[in-house]
Image (cartoon, rainbow, N blue to C red; front, side):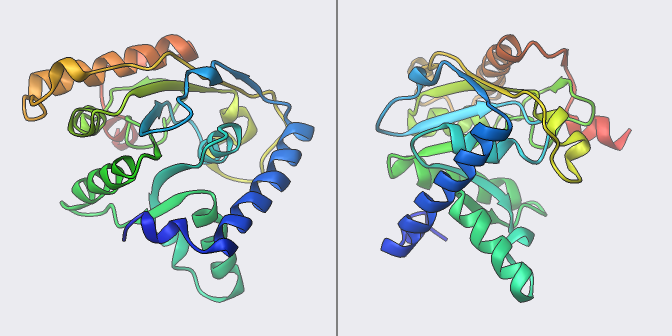
Length: 235
C-alpha cells in the first residue's frame, strides 16, 4: 500500500480538512493545548517527527497541532472492523493519516520501515515513536534503531517532540478521554547527514537513536530507562 493512493481524490482531502477543523475546534475548547517550537517543523520537504508515546491519543494530538499532514503507522486491525462501527473507525484513522500495516511477525518491522521511507520519498511528514510501543509507566524507554535507519536512508531531518500531559487525558491508553492540560513541545531539527552510507553499522545506528532519545527526554522531562519498553511490559 502506497501513500500516494491515500492522497486520494478531492473527497478524501475535504474529509481530512473537515475532520481537522472539527476536532481542532474541540481540542482547543476542551484542552487548550500549549504548542511550543512548532516553527522547527519545515514548511515543505520530508520530515521525521520522533517523540515519546505515553497513550493511544498521542497521534491524534500530533496530527491536529501540526499544520501539514502527518502520516504514521498503525495496526491494521484498526481498519478491518466490520459493520458501521468498523467503517467509521477505518475512515477516522486513515483520514487522520494512519497507514495500516501488519506489524506482527518477523516482517512487521521491515514493512513499517519501508512504509516510512515511501512517505518521506514523497516529501511528506512521517511520525514515529522510537520506543516501538506505549510506555507502560510514563517513563521514557530505549529507542529502536529503525528511526536511525530511516533518517540515514532518506536524509530527512529528525524533529524531536514530547507529549506532556496526554497520559492524564487517557490514563493507560483506555477509556474515554478526560480533560487535562496538554503540551506538545518540538525541538530543533537534527541532521544526520554526516553518517551517510553507514545505515548498516549497528554502532552508528545505536548512537543516532540514542541522540534522538536524548533530545526527546530533555523536551519532555521524563525519567529515562535504558531497556526496551516491550521487555518492561513483559516483566
